[in-house]
Amino acid sequence: MTGKCLLCGFDHGSDDKGNKRTGSHSQRTCVFRSWPCLHSLPADHPYHKEGRCLTADCTHLEKNCPKCSKDGHRMNTLRLDLSRFNLDNKGNITRRRGAPALTKSDFECPYLSERDGAKWVSAQHDAC
Image 1 (spheres, rainbow, N blue to C red):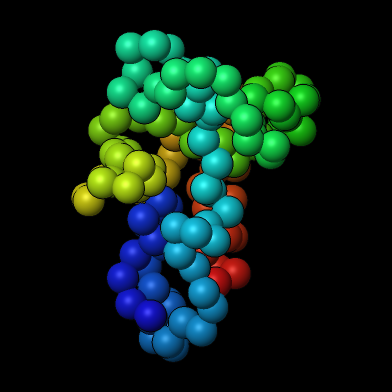
Image 2 (image 1 turned 30 degrees about the vertical axis):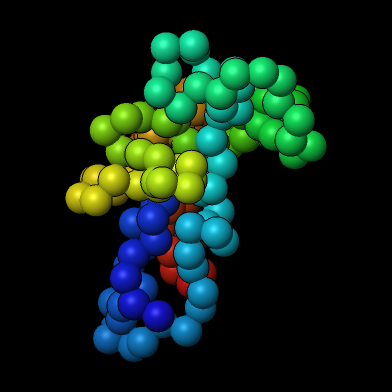
């Protein structure tokens, strides 16, 4: 498989040593595939959905983030920044082409430090 993950930008090519990667990593399996409940976004947000959320494992149901102890997000919940993400024609959230690598400001959890975020992204990419 070649290309990049549509969420975190993971490159499917060779690793640092030139070895071909054997793991699978896609938008569907990416550990960073978590965003705020679209129903709880402000009404003027382009990704806002009307009505009640009926998703059983939605982030709005999360209690006590392990990092900051706040409700409504997971540690890996991404902030839906319009400069980084867009909706495809099927309604899926994807990363914009050329979007920079994930940083602290891309995560909902306010207690995630820049160093923690970079280490976490790196560890997830190394596992693939």
